[in-house]
Image 1 (cartoon, rainbow, N blue to C red):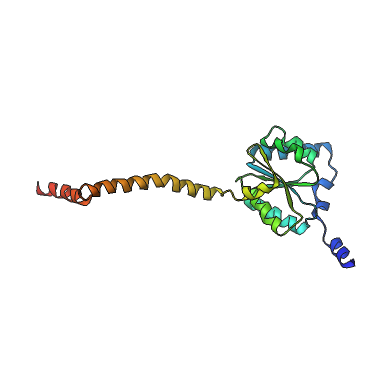
Image 2: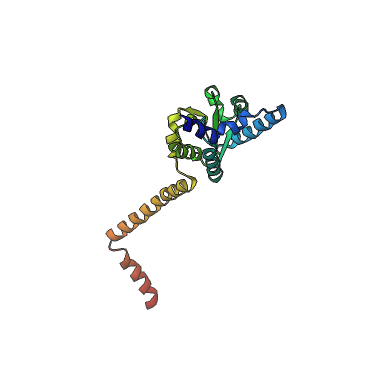
Length: 199
């Protein structure tokens, strides 16, 4: 029992260093709301996560990965978050914001926040998705899996290129098949090439 208590004292909890535990004055609160409102207005998706019990090391690693993948990650009081998301497509989550939450906004790709939370929740059972919102719709926490499975921008562009290229290749095959059926597509082309040479 003493070893567990010693470990807990040695490994500080992320919640003890979060902005939520710090007292903010009015101007600081206004800055936080303005910053969050700006991010929410441009974001593609939101995942709100219960993070209590997450260590500083885990939170630092998650923030680093979030910066690399275009996810805005912030711990903020729910009352400030409600003010910030008012008037955006994420205001549908207002009634579900209860308890200490970590907000993950996807700023570049809709599935980025879902992939980040899914990846870090594997190694941390304390990290529990609570709310998912995409396109002005509220989804249960289980939709983190769906959000995480969305293709990245590069994957979506590759799929679009394949879809656009398919009709052209089908048309080329159809023209070749018609030409082959009418007497071999290469014979008329050779005859046309020999005709100017004889003249």
